[in-house]
Image (cartoon, rainbow, N blue to C red; front, side, top):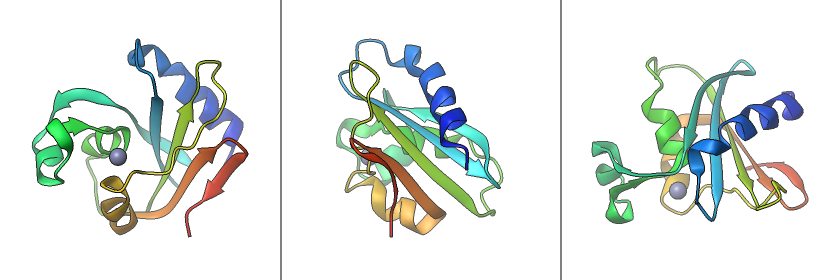
Length: 120
Ligand SMILES: [Zn+2]
């Protein structure tokens, strides 16, 4: 996993998050290759309601997962969260996302202030 190139890809998607306080970007990888990118959205989606999100908003993990067509493979989730200077912040999936993420993803990685960590 090349974290630098994944971070560059995540940063490229930040303009989609104009005005957001927390800049979350989720990448879904298949065999180290990004196949889907998601960002936090205010729009609704039936899956967001099914997973009981407040106001049915779509978190970045779900936004990325919605776009995956073949859902039968072993995927890796990589979550980035950026501060206002694009410094890394804690991006561990929230309490609503984590259960289904653990069910669906083979591996989960996320940024913290101190680096990238793997969920165990
Ligand atoms: Zn979440």
